[in-house]
Length: 309
Image (cartoon, rainbow, N blue to C red; front, side):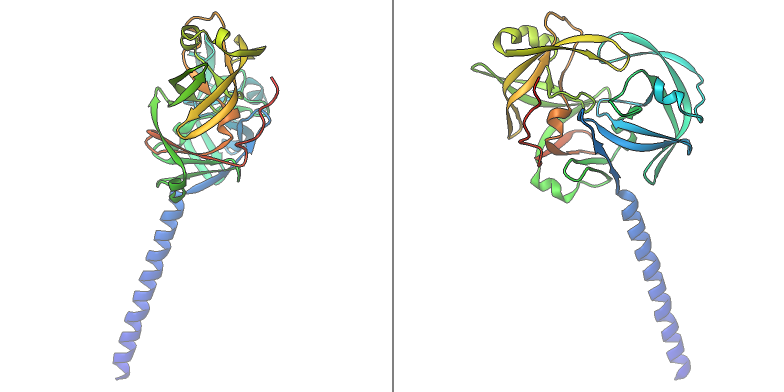
């Protein structure tokens, strides 16, 4: 009888051990599928994230929804010891013009506890103020990107967060490593719909493309409040007119008296319309893993007054 009890006890203990090991593996796998990245929202509406390059060099990187590679500024590079450049190539910036850029093929990038091996990086002249470079959604390929501006946390996961049920879902198009959604503009008596590039690297609210600007005579139909010079990441200077857009509709979300910019007289240089950080920060945002949808929910910044032009 004693032998039988010992065998049963042994079997029970063995079963419990297997169950504990399995449970821990499931928890570990679930944890590995989701990780959080704290960020700072800068005064220029950029998402700034602390990173480590090659285990040695610390740098603040801007999360840039329209970027397709890791880039570092010339100034940031000058302060680093771990980089080795293999050559240079010609690249094109969104502001126009071709520029020579050095590249480094094989680097280790660490953000929080997450590491990426064999990462190539490129040299740029500029990034968002207070940051030494930028990276884009390609780092999180095949994963959901949850940007919570209330908590200042970006969460990366394999599954759609349950809270997405409370968000408004918009169809998106991911083309040439850039993410677009459709939004409608109220201009005079018209409501005009067009695709906008989601551009977290642009500090402003809205920037219209040249074709839309000229076809709809925005300089005549919108109230102009100022003019301003912009520089892209390679130093190309662009003069933008600032105006007030009566209303912008993003799904069921309506924003009134929205600051908008455009380049008067330019033809074909600004090829796409942009929604920038001044608007994006007003929503908590989830980008789908396949980049075919964007989920929006107004947050605590939604009714924040727009800055004076």
